[in-house]
Length: 57
Image (cartoon, rainbow, N blue to C red; front, side, top):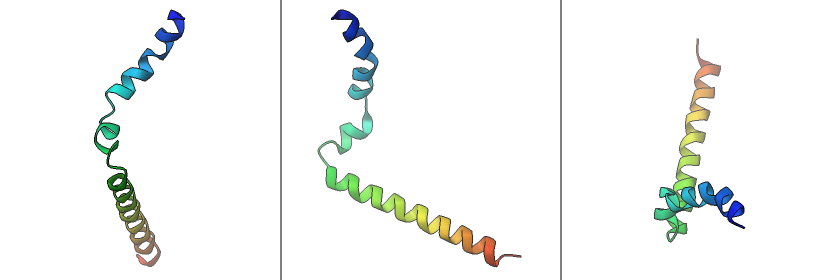
C-alpha cells in the first residue's frame, strides 16, 4: 500500500496547488463565463485573421 501512495503523491501535490481549482472551485458559474469569453475572443481573432488573409493583398 505505501508504494501506491508514493505513486499518487505528485497527483495530490498538483491538486493541492491548483490555483484555478482553488479560485473557481466554488465559482463554477464564473468559470463557465470565463471559458465562454475566452472562446468568443479566440473565435473573433481567428475570424478576423481569416478575413484579413482572404481579402488582403
